[in-house]
Image (cartoon, rainbow, N blue to C red):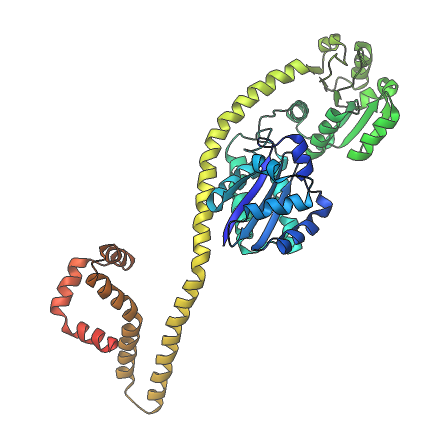
Amino acid sequence: MSILAYGLNHRTASLDLRERVAFSPEDLDRTLQALTSEVQGIEEAAIISTCNRTEIYCATDASREEDISHWLTDTRPVTLSELKGASYGHWDQDAARHAIRVASGLDSQMMGEPQIMGQFKSAYEVARKTGTVGPELSLLSRMTLRAAKKIRTHTDIGKNPTSVAYAAVSLADQLFSNLNQRRALLLGAGETAALVAEHLRAKNIAEIWVANRTLENAQILAARVGASAIQLSEVPEHLANFDIVIASTGSTIPVVGKGAVEAAILQRKRRPMLMVDIAVPRDIESGVSSLADVYLYTIDDLAKIIEVNKAKRVEAADSAESIVAEGANAYQRERRLQRGQALLKSFRAQADAVRIQEVERTLKNLEKGDNAEELIQQLSKTLTQKLIHPPTAAIRSASAEGRQDLLTYFGELYDLDPALSEDADQTSPIQDQNINSTDA
C-alpha cells in the first residue's frame, strides 16, 4: 500500500481553475464516499479543499494519479489537459514531506498563515467520521500534525504577520495583553473588514462593532462575524466605547476627525486607543496622530512591518525545512515499524507456542514423579535449542553462501564476537552436538 498526495494549488493553478476543482465542506463526506467507491484501488482518502488548494491524500495499491484525474473530470467542470498542466503527485515519504509543509503554512500563499493547520486537521477529522481514514492515513495525519506543531512552536514562521488585516490585528494584540477584554470598531464592511473581523475573532476579542455608510451592508457583515452594526454617522457618539478602531472604507474623505477622537479620549479618561487606518485615501484625519493616548498607524506603517516580517518568515522557513525533513523521516520510520508489527507478532506467537508445548511436557513428567531438577535442566536446554535453531540454520547458510553482509548483521543483532565464536566451535563439541540434534 502506497500513500499519494495529489492536487493543485496557488502556485500551479489559476484562481478560476482552483474554484472549479474545489469541494464544498458540506459535500465532503459524500465526495469521499464517492471517491473511495468509484476509483478502484483507493482504500483510504482525505480531501483538503481551501481557497489556495485542493489536495487528495489517499492510500492506494497502485499508481492512481490518472484515475483520480479522470474522476475529477467526471465530478468537476475541468478537463484532463487543464489538470495535467496544473496538478502534482507526491508519493510516500515525499507525500509526508509535502503534507508537513502544507499543515505548517510553509506552502501557503501567505507563508506561515495560521489557519491551514486547523483546516488540515478538520479535513482528516471529516474523513475519519466518514470512514475513509484507516491506519495508513491515520499515521500520516498524526505524524504530519506533530511535525507541523513543532515548526510552529520552535520557529518564527507564524509570528510575523504578512497581510494588512493580520498585521492590524497583531498590532492590537501587542498593545493590549488581553483582547478578550477589549472592544473593536471596524469602519467599513468590505472584504478587508471581514478579514480583520475573522482575525479578531481568532484572538478571542470581547466585542466587535461594524460601522458603514450603508447600514444594511454593516448588518450583513455583522451577522457573518457575530458583531453589532451601526451607521458611520453614529460613530462619534460611540467612539469612546472602543479600545481598537480599524478603518477600511471606500470614502474619498476622512470619516473620523481629530475633534471626535479628542472628545472620545477625554471620555475614556486617557485610557489608550489604537487606531489603524488601512484605507486609501485615509479614513482618519492625520492630525489624530498628535493626540496623547492615541496610537495611529497607516497603511504605509503596516507595509513596512509586513516587508520586515516577510524577510523574517523566509529566514524562519529555512530552519523549518530541517524539521520538515526530520518529520518526513520519522513518518517513514514509523511506517516501516507498523509494517513490521505483523511479522513481530508472528515471531512472538511462534516462540510462545514452543514455550507452552515444552512447559506442558515438563509438567506431565513432573506429575509422573520424575526428578524436578533434571526436568528443569532439560526444559531450558530444549527451549534454547528450539529457539536458536532458525537463526543457527540461517548463519550456516549465510556462511556457506559467502553472505558476509548477513553474518555481520547477525553479529550486530546478537552482539556476537566472531573470534570468540570461532574458538567456541573448536572447543565446545557439546554445543555442536546439541545444535546437530536439534537440526536432525
